[in-house]
Length: 335
Figure 1 (cartoon, rainbow, N blue to C red):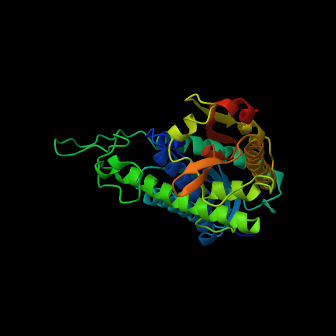
Figure 2 (spheres, rainbow, N blue to C red):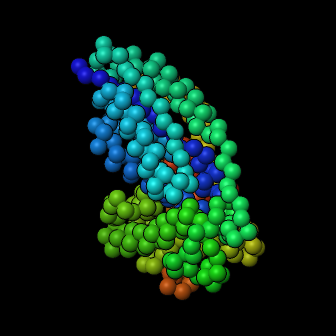
Figure 3 (spheres, helix red, strand yellow):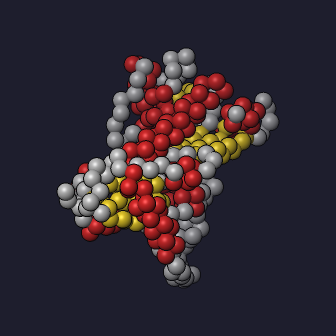
């Protein structure tokens, strides 16, 4: 029948990576980087390692590797390397593997797999606890300048991309923050193209280079939501503060599904886990899309981008969402 092994992965300290700075560019760029790694890169690597996807969302994932335990470990290490390369070692991910006994047939639908899924979960918890025991002490020297964004890592270079902030020409950034800023710049171009496709054809063209969250959200917006060419996200938090009826307030909304660990643990087969994970993930996007249509119509922008979304997505997917909105509609959006 051949060997079969389960692989489970989970991103370490997501919020610490995303909110390492208080700048919207780095926050959005970090979130998009993790989304791309989770949604795109894991699926790409799965094909190379003959792995069947159970789910990938919310920074985690599960796969059925139709091969030996050693092959599954190689797959997990490949995911770890990709995270380090794409984030300049800023984000890490833990994984665990669990071999399925050869006498279990039809692994995808067999309830006998359930105890091994539970064991896999505890192996992952153990590995996440063991992977961050070392304390890193960075070198210190009067001529070594800390990053002007996060202040944690040492500065490596100036930001070479376009920026409306004149102080960017004088600031120096670490490799991690530069990766976040570069990603945010790419996402902006991606949103412009997605909006253009939606306005022209009523649909979006799916592409691996598109920002996943915006591709899905814009694609779900109905024709009644009046999109316009040159619509973009807010360039910074200040643009949201001025949209609350003259008062300089904005709102941060964080929603997280209840008891998802318990719900997933009760699912007996891989097929059930795939179905529920996909259903919950789609529900988050559907809820956000409906809130946008009802309470967050586009507003006037400035400069090249004449129109602006009056919100920004900081994190979305899996079972949670974090979004910033004008304060006067926050309660309605949350509801």
